[in-house]
Length: 373
Image 1 (cartoon, helix red, strand yellow):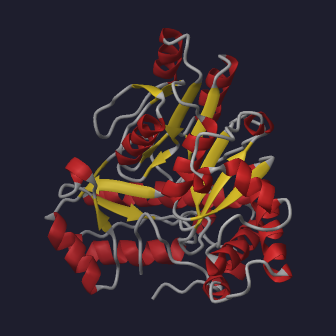
Image 2 (cartoon, rainbow, N blue to C red; image 1 turned 90 degrees about the vertical axis):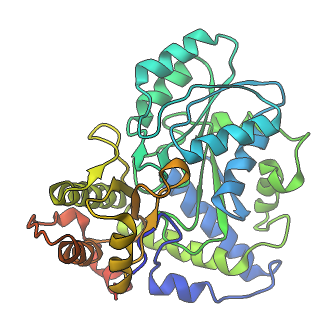
């Protein structure tokens, strides 16, 4: 059982769909491209979604290069490893980056973001990470942040690689110019497809020169108008992601948001009772990753879980050998959580009996596709 921040376990029909290999200029593939964009637009609440062959990092860098011009002044707010990577991408793009820093395990308040905008009247853009899998912390108040940023007349770019489908996110309604994710996260598909969702406003902000063709969202969208991709795509991953998007549609995006939060709250409660020191609090905890200092030696805890065929991961950067990170994104449900908790009880030698919330369960039609063995 793989409980890491991605890639994730996927439903059986998604895995089967990934085996399709067809001519990427065929009508069958064109239909898949059109259907996948249609469904992802629905899930993002966006105007267009560029479909990119690559990882979540490709989606982030495509957003940066396609939405930010050289010399633009951009505000960013890193609070973990991926926030710093976003900052690095902006610097490489040639933007004038003003970065507000936080200690590991902390995040920014709405007032701090307001103050930063007020201090930088000549800024054009705010770019930030929605959910940090490196620290198990997130911006849970993204709508309020969007209101502040857009009321100041700035562009808003969101790295939601590990946030999409785990929190409310309405690209057009909140006037987010661009938000990106990857197929191997809460969408619950295999790795290989990046998604860049654009709002009505974002479509008017696209840069169409001075960037590599592979990172050019405009170019991808032009080809998608005819159901194609500009370059050879990850064909199997497109079919898998289409199936994953269909299953998300069946579950309902709001139900998936609720499932992630219910599972996260439950697991945090259990681990806290067992003696884990959790990162994050009720105002900023992640719905997709629980990060914590274990009450026993880290390597012992992880190896004991491995003996029980449960894989989690360590921290990143300065937290690498200090914390464990448990990924609960995609199709993780009450059955997976129960098995994990039972195993932790054996290892920690402390039983905790809290009822798992109903919202943590998968609907029956998805439950039969996912085995936790």
